[in-house]
Image 1: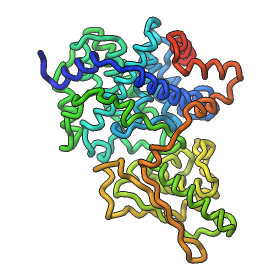
Image 2: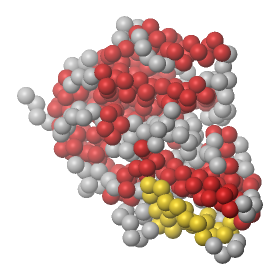
Image 3: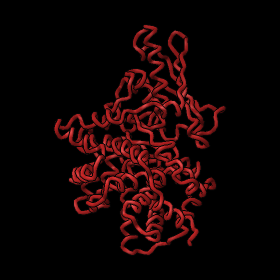
Image 4: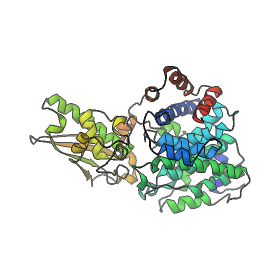
Length: 440
């Protein structure tokens, strides 16, 4: 028996079986995926990167390019799910890979598809723990790096490959894994998801075709080199599926189309806006002198754009999201498109200053302990302050079905209802109708 980490992982991901609860959570994840994908696919939200992606990577006869297109489209709005252990967006890469491969396999069953998705999320979460706390803070985009390996593992499960072939595929995925956070705020960020899905597909296809690669040592090397002395390889396998990572901590579904690192700040601002309205002093922006936002050191690593020029950059701006929440009482997609930033929001955002809290533990040590405290300094000399933690934000309910219906609202009613019904993934036929729709 081969006791290498890669071999043990291959054996584990091929042999453990999710149950009904895991499959049901997978269906919720799939609905959220489609809710994020359809507005861009059908042009409800303009994305100027889509046409070049389709032109450069035509998908008509290429599973790899279909995976790339789906990964790009489903991550384009930055509205897709998040997994805290992974510190990234697992579904955009995993489902894009599985859907592309299933196009060429019309006999794939819904149970096999969902089980592979569950395995992909499991591997994503475990890779996040195994790589340690420094990978993301060093500048890597986990969705792109770890996501490539997680999606390849899910694909091996879907196709029921041998242990040896799976080992080769995982190693090929690891050697292609790349993606830098410095691309946040541009179309290259969703391209990361697409490139990762494409790499997962070609890793599996190469391994299936008999291409040679190292069957052991590559994952170990990946964790050692890119873990920056903080890797914990034992986390990759310990207590696999007990519970499954799609159950606990589970997928977190976004209620706002912005970086997850802005959400608790937005919710603190919502509370303050309500308090201001109750005072009856006038328009919010007119009575605020300045705003401070505090958080653990390093918690603004992802939302690091202070003065965004357009809505895409604004998704990664604490200042803009706080100002939007204060002025409008919402964080709506219409303010986070490619259009220039709104002047009134930008003007208030310029009054926001960041103040990392030196008494809080560094964010990279435990992102789950993140918080945002927003303090308003009013023109009359008074102050209002409110704090919301990441845990509070994550625990709040997100109505994924409503999110999906809203994403389909621009379609003809009959088509929208059919897509909505199929997105419940209740049968093999529903899965393959969706694949056919996405492949056109």
